[in-house]
Amino acid sequence: MSDIQRKQLRQAYGYDDVAIVPGEITVNPELVDISTTIAGVRLDVPILASAMDAVVDPHFAIELGRRGGLAVLNLEGLQCRFEDPDDVLARVAASDQEGATAILQEAYTTPIRPELVAARIQQIVDGGVPAAVSVTPPNTKRLAPIIRDAGADILVVQSTVTTARHESRSLKGLILRDLVAELGIPVLVGNTVGYRAALELMAEGIAGLLVGVGPGAACTSREVLGIGVPQVTATIDCAAARDEFERRTGRRVPIITDGGIRTGGDVCKSFAAGADAVMIGSPFAGTQEAPGRGYHWGMATPHAELPRGVRVHVGRHTSLERLLHGPTSRTDGTENLAGALRTSMGSVGARNLVEMQRTEMIIAPAIKTEGKIYQQRRD
Image (tube, rainbow, N blue to C red):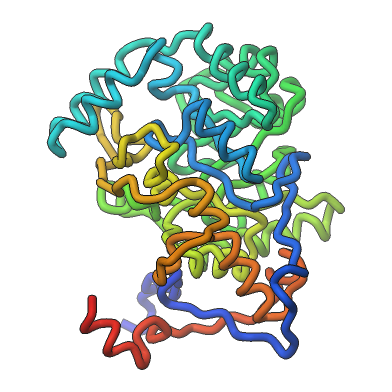
């Protein structure tokens, strides 16, 4: 028995398992700089909106861009399959749970229209904000020239799990290094959760990396496929890869923690774990500006054979302005995310995001329940 090699498991941590340790000095929140730069685009608010049909359309992208963030438009979604996607969106919102997935699966059989791809990008460009768009690897080669010619600022190549080494029956699949060299605009890729995979992807010349497999509120990849790593651990591992890659090459590739973020506290913990920016879906889906009519669903929900997402009801209970900048009367951290980040950074003495990345964290699974008996009774 002593010669048997058993698989070893390591502990991994999500947002509710950890806490940020206050610093030895403090800084007034108004002196804190929360800006970041992703692929040459400066963001006054280091928050991106997920490339999901219920979250981002051209109107939402413009409104978020004007408030300092960056929205990513899904070029394989309803916006680029239908001239007017409102009918499909309304049917999804009015349907029951099982019917909503069937409606989306049917809608996604409508082909992607290249002229709509160009038109949607042009709408965002005309709105005076950076245009970031998303495609999956199978459609990247076909749509990349249209994306470039339409004036997009950032291309995100996104799938459930992305690696630099991929085996398929294709004679020549998507080679990220070639895409980066030929396209002429910055390429972000995602998603990943591991140190070695992140290092290899950065070596392909990408301009940023999305971190997270399955943590989103509407994603069911963890249930369907059994894969994923809790976001705090995933961010720490990929941040270590970013730092090592910068040490080797002198080039810093920002990492974007994508998914599972519900509150200002989660945003702050993402940066303390090493993120350069965060990507959010469900909180944005609950804004009045979002196209989902108070509902949200995962990117893989319409998959024809193996759906890996579910429609969730998030309500339409806030605005982009209140979500990002307040003012708010809510005490649960679901509004004024930028204000929460500034205040947390001030509490640990971090003047900018790089300093926030260096702050101490601890394993503290009781951090949200210790001494909170009256709140629990209220809830």
